[in-house]
Amino acid sequence: MASHGDFSPEARERALRTVLVADIFGDHAELIVAQLPDVPDGSVLVAVVDADHAFAGTHHVGQADLPERIPQLESDGGWAMVFSYPATTEDVRRRAADYAATARKRAELIDKIIARRAGADD
Image (tube, rainbow, N blue to C red; front, side, top):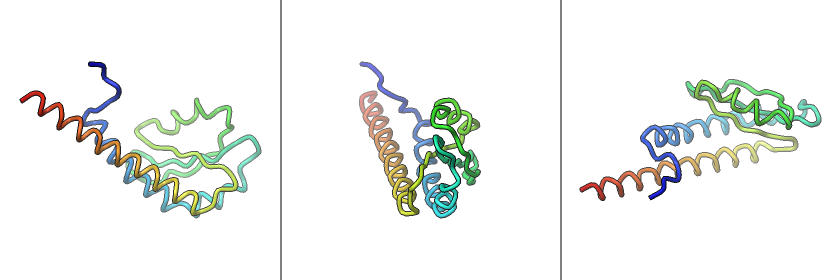
């Protein structure tokens, strides 16, 4: 049978940590939105939470540079979310909640797969 993803305990832990991190993005929604009008044309605002679950600020990143910059900003175990004008505080909070819900579902899926595999080994 082919494997279609990482269903390791580490992947489960990362998903659970992402749920916590999503709340941090949501908690900083007003700060994120306040900085959007200053983003130059052709760029977006990238908000970052570090590996210690602390809000690490925002960065203006050119849209063409996103594939290179996002991994750099997420290095050392951090998370990044991209925002563009005219997002509202509610938009940011909604996206953060969706991010948390997706991560929660991933952790639940990993739990089911691990349980199924454990049952097959019995």
